[in-house]
Length: 373
Image (cartoon, rainbow, N blue to C red; front, side, top):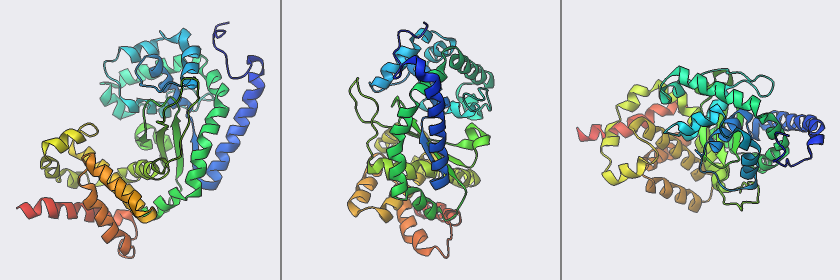
């Protein structure tokens, strides 16, 4: 009776049997994806749990859709649950917070806090505040019977993700990225669909969010296209979604350790940030606030642009480069030229990206710092 106001996509009496079949089919889908290409595309239950909580708190700028209506109808009895109240009362909201779902154990088999990420301790001011919020989220999961909602939509989650998975496999996008870096690793990819379309896309760094997931490349993917309120999410397969985003978000994960290793040398390039004029800085600061973050974005955008230069028609590559510069990432061109002119033609000298990375730092230093002395 508690859920009588919400009409599930299927009659309630068939849900138990359907749940078993769907879980079996979803497992086959996942295992098949991993066996063939190490790629899974779907809705992560933990991430979706936090997305729903923040949606019910009014913290997300969610695209109207039938799925949003389903969420608001089903979870309305819990709109004042402590987890929702905590999310609502916070005077800040950071999109990436939904990645806390990856710090939980597997749902529904193991609904526990597996790890408390230090990065969110800094954002939320204390370890205890993160722990309490995660506990509240798990209580919301249990009290609202979140898993019933998730299972009832699971066939749709698979359907929405399948075209993305097929497009990435067909064009060998992951293989091209791996070839660029030059080191073959046993890497599993997980593209977590943001079906509320609230948060766009971002890379989840596994070792930061949950060390148990280290070795995976995970990123969140919104669909961004407008829908009518009575429609379900539609993922339009564009070159940006297939190429730029996969290469961009994958590179965040693949260069993370390297940037930590050369942290001091990257910080020494801070004059490149200081020399930017006010208009460029203002444009950049909508996305980045300091030089290390600017360098991180510059690097992965240059890599993505170089891969497009390699694999796409010239007009598509040129539009991508112009877009990056227009957004204020003015050093992308220099880094992309180093990759195209020095790294990719000289793979015997630089067998992998790690061996070439110091040359990027040295090239920027020589052009913008050493030359000024």
